[in-house]
Structure formats: C-alpha cells, structure tokens
Image (cartoon, rainbow, N blue to C red; front, side):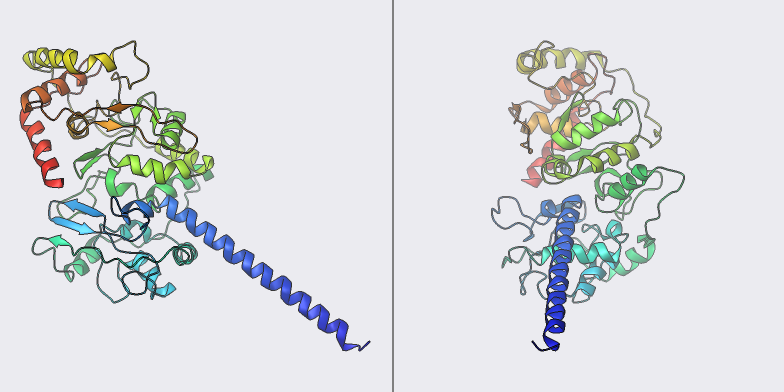
Length: 404
C-alpha cells in the first residue's frame, strides 16, 4: 500500500467531519433565526390578513393618525421581497432603518428596537428568512398625509429619536431579569404598542410600557400599576397568559391574540418566566384619579347588562370570563372594552390548549347604551374604573368603520 494513501484517507475523513460540522452549525443558525423570528412577531406584521400560504409576504396595514403603512415582503423573492439583499443590507435595515436601495424606513417597522440586536442575531434571522418559500407579491403603496409621505423626513426622525446604544446587561439584576428585559425591549419590541407615543411617534418621556391605544385597541399598562396594570398579577399569572392567552384576570383579545398565538405561546418556558420576572420588577406609575360613576348611567347599564350579558357573565358561570378585576374591563382607556362589545370576541387556539368561549357582537346598541353598560361593568363587583361617555363610544364606533 502506498504510504500516501493513509494520509489521504485521514485528510478526506477530516474534510467530511468539517463539512458535517459546518452543516450542523448552519442548521443551528437557521433554527436560532427561526426562534428570533418567533420572538420578534415577524410573521404577524409581515403577513396580510386572509393571505393563506403567503406568510412573510407583507401587506399588513399599520394604521396611525397620519395614515397607513403596509408591511414589506420579507420572503426571499428577488423581485418583490428581500431575495437580492445581502447580510450587510439586512443588518443595516434592522440597525439603521435603511432599506437595500437606500430609502429610509418608517418606524412602523420597529428598527428603533431591533437596532440593539447584535450582528450574529441579524445574520441568523437573515439565514432563516432565506429558507422560507419565496412569494411574488408587492404590498400596496403607503397612504400617508403630507409631510409624512416624504421619506427624507425620516433622516430627521432618526437623528432626533433613534438610539443605537447596544443592550448591556445590568449586573445588579439576575440573568433571568436581564434576559426578560432584552426580550421585552429588543426582539419583542413591546414598547412599540405598550409605550405611550408623542406626536411624531416617538416614545413619550415617562411613558415606558404605561399603555397606548393602537389601531383601536388599548395596549395596556405593563407596569405594577393598580388596578389597571400588572400590579394584581403574579409572575405565574403573566407566564400563563403568555402561554395560553388567558388567566384568572381575563382572556386575550384584539391584536394581542396574534402575538400570543404566533409568538409568546411558542416561546420557551424559560423565556416566558424571564419576561414575567422583568415585568414584575417595573414600578407602578401614578394611577389616575377615578371619579364616582354617574348613577343614571349605572342604572341604564345594569338594565342593558341584565338583558344582554348576564346569561353568560353571571357570577356562577365558570365557562366565560369573570368581569371582576378583568384586565380588559378596568383599563384606564375603555377602547378595548367598547370594541369587544361592538365586535364580539373569541378565544384563540394555541398549542396544547383547548379553544374556549365566543362572545357575540352587539353593534345595534346605541352609543348611550354602549357607554352605560361599559360604565356598569367597569364599576361593579369591586371594579373602580370610572365613567365611559357616549362620545367615547361613538368615537370607537367611527374608528371601527374607518378600519373596515
């Protein structure tokens, strides 16, 4: 046998091992990228409603007072998606809010949060998105009023509001707390909905996770506020809610249903626990003064409740959400409660959980009766959340017509 043959066999064996290791590393990177996409709710905002089989193809409408922005196609289609983008261009979009062709992105795409993603995470997410099915679809053009329709203005917005500081762990807190803060502030971009926004869609000082109204839904206060924040909730309550969409304080409704179904229910138990650890550490902001509800409105609301709601929401009925201390009912902004009454609601299906209740819509209620029944449930059974006015009810109804 030639003396060179054993050496050649060793070399070939080594190459096979290296190739297998590289393939394994690549697959690990793709799997991590898939999990990052889950943490970041990417499929939710980059999939238009009713577009079966076109996940990540874009077209989801994101509404604000200055118009509507449609999410982009992030499938690897080379014409309408990001198939021709490089890793560097993808990282620049996440980190700087600049697309591959150089145009500025609107903060409806939460690059203000993703800017803290490290390069390795960006590359893993990029690698995963390259593996999904390409879809040839071009979302509708944005519908924005002047001057927000001029993308050059985003240069000023970025200069004023974009903070590119990397995420730094706080040594004064536990690893779980730091993981939770990173999940909430960076990939989860919870502040995109739950932090109050100023006129130019920047975060209000002092408004961190204190609640905001988005697309007609009120994203609630996530601080330790009582009773309309997470003050009454335990860490276990938060974990259960993120996993199943329900807990002893109510069931998920509105836009958060998609977040639970596509993101938080698919997280690891450790990550849900980390989020709960961090959120329970947030101090309560100042709660608003609650005035005593109008007696006439309460009486009218009681009548409407008995006629329309009591069959399901009676105290001895366990199959439907209790209204006492219900997180939707006691929020300082009644928008979500009004919308649920007008549109109805249904439970979501998450892995390992049964689908629960379905609530009918009551669009025929007058604004006065709608406000009265909302006032009644917000101020009964120990709840104390204040009046709802017919004007507020009418405003929500008008907004729903515009959204539809």
